[in-house]
Image 1 (cartoon, rainbow, N blue to C red):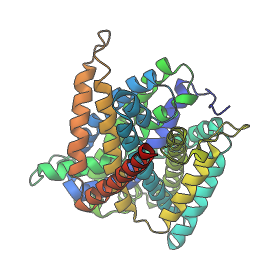
Image 2: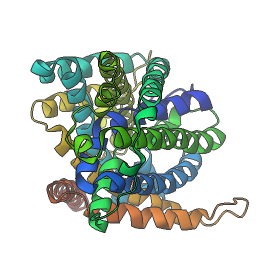
Image 3: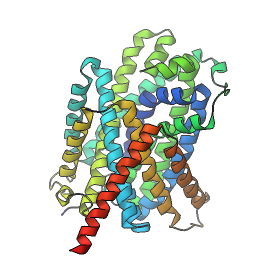
Image 4: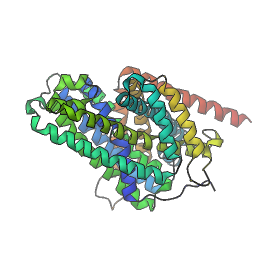
Length: 414
């Protein structure tokens, strides 16, 4: 029977969301975002990205509770809009998150063994895939351990750096343009996109109508608070120029605070954090690939579920193989921009799908207004990313759309 087993409760689902988000923003994205928007612009961009992510989280939670199966927005777009909308969302998620997996693997290599980063990245992909193939219970347990260690390291950075924050570095908005803030927000969105992993694991969550709407905003709220605190510390200690140029901002924070001996702890924490992100990313991409294969939008052979471990083993192996190929060619910052572009399209479709659900009188928040704001925000951030990311992202989406059209044209003629 090709169905996945429901094993995850609210705590496990929150941990999977935390493991998907913590690491990407703190250890990878702050520097390019600061380079795009400046110091105070970084804080504005982080708040904007967090708000749009909150809108998306609300829409995703509503939809996931209605359609508790693997696939996320791929399923929602098909059910609420049109099969093509679902395909475009699924295609954008798979290609964008494959790029994210490559970026995370390369980051692990850069921290552990800079001279052989690609080799270490390949080894990381193989090791993480082996864990995921043992079952989602193993994925959640491993992620819980990783998240605990990362939170300790981030708390260490915050406590060490807080006394050295210079307040005057946080309030200078002169010369910060609107497009610069939007570009930085689009890059920072990469750091928030992990909460959707809870929705893509919807077929493995117990009592999804209750669990998913609670787990998604809870995970996002915790991460947003952590990001804001660490952004203030990093900017206040390093300043705009040093933060923008830094390859390891949080390690530089503890060094600038007069404790260079702790830098290795932060680097180890970065490796642990990014490993947690990679663990959940590969699991989420594998589940979306499974959902698309079930509906023949990807090869049907990828729809198999392992009889013992209850995981989409062929889909996960195929995704891992593609990630290894991308690792051989990828640039980390370029991969982040490309991933942000395609994933923003994914969430735009999620918000459009949520708009079709209608208003829910029992809710206090104007959920339809949040869905509309999320839809507009995703489109605006996507088109304001660096031009190379926009052209590449929309180009790959167009290739997928062309393949979809050709396949359906041929099928209709037959």
